[in-house]
Amino acid sequence: MKVLRAPLTDEDIRAVAEGEEVLISGVMYTARDAAHRRLAEAAARGEDWPVDLKGQILYYTGPCPAAPGEVIGPAGPTTSGRMDPYTPLLLSRGLKAMVGKGRRSKEVLAAMEKYGALYLVTYGGLGVLLADRIKRAEVVAYPDLGPEAIFRLEVENFPAIRPTASYLQR
Amino acid sequence: MGRRRMLCISRNKYPKFIPDPEVVKELCLRAVSRLPADVRRALEAAREREEDPVAKRTLGLILENARLAAERGRPLCQDTGVAVVFVELGQEVRLVGDLEAAVNEGVRRAYVGGYLRRSVVADPLLRENTRDNTPAVLHVELRPGDEVKITVMPKGIGSENMSRLAMLKPADGRKGVINFVLETVARAGPNACPPLVVGVGVGGTMERAAYLAKKALLRRLDEPNPRPHLRELEEELFERVNELGIGPEGLGGRTTALAVLVEAFPTHIGGLPVAVNLGCHAARHATAVWRPGRGWEVQA
Image 1 (spheres, chains in turn orange, green):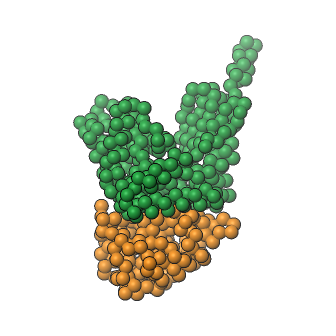
Image 2 (cartoon, chains in turn purple, green):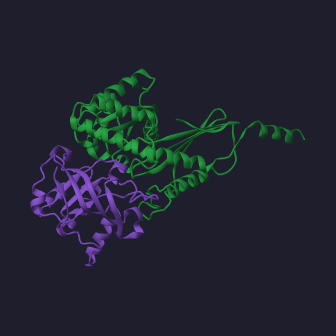
Image 3 (spheres, one colour):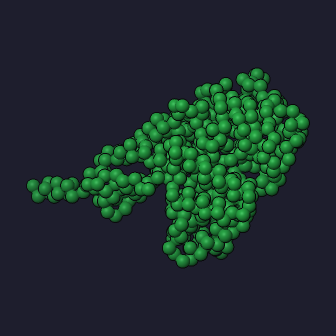
């Protein structure tokens, strides 16, 4: 099975076929609703972002807090479509791949085409199984957002699938 | 002093019920980490039946995740939800204390002390996190007798967001209800984390239909509605939802729903409200019953 590791190149992205399962190892950043909104607001004010997403993989998740002895609490994917209004902006700044669950808007699919980016899905509701693939986790931005903060994760063999057209279609 | 004496008698006649936050806390912690036995059995049966290899494997992963979560006492899913709490209060108990405050205190203890995700914002537009997952969404129903039943359903937003309600015309009838349910499941696709438990509320008024749909999600998956025409409707919907081909996690296959559960209520001559509340495969809920002289008992 193919292993993806950020920073990703255009070639890495083109090599993943529809319906193909891959493994992600190395770094992923997290962001969900509130973090996306903050990034968009920062961009509108012309401020720098607290993380450089160029070539990176973004995982849409808001984990449970880590219990004693855990790297991170359960951390499955959240519904990607809620991030759609912000995604073209992130892609225009070099984000290369997103991991979540569910469908994307036409605008996002078009922006992925334009900037050369990959959308992957992983298993919704498998919080424990997926958290076991996360080996390190630290908050790197917006700690006041709690589960919605931006985390830098180091993962090993984190499973994801490039969805087919029928998955993405309504 | 006859009146005073009567008051004393009536006071003593009814058992004193003091709502206990610890019970609510235990139910929250249990619900987020342990699938109800009927849900687990339905997932196992679906895995047996499933012919699509990807779907079969995905159902295996869902069961493996559930096993690990129960073993570690940790949430199946990071979205530990809004705590929806149902209280059936026997009207022959004497409630001493503040029921809603006790429920919220139990939720607070579970979500803060139990390392669960706090997902509630205080205002839907201002969106500041309350940091303890309160308030719960509390529903209280009066019942005959002197028992008290509390059920906690941690409801995730992935499936909640894809739920819908329609005020159909009486002429739309059974067919209209079926079409609305199928359309709702198809629109939800992979977003709601299938295989789903589909709760359908038909009749009543707008809010009653929604409430029936939510309560349907608490029913045992293997017990059809006792009314024959509703049981037949459940069977037809189950068949047709699973013909949609969405499959576990939306990756294709036969298992789009684990069950379709329909609840009905009398309605107006001019109306046919229908609500569809989708539940994800982490169909979580836990119940405890209080009986006078026996205290609380958690239901398996």
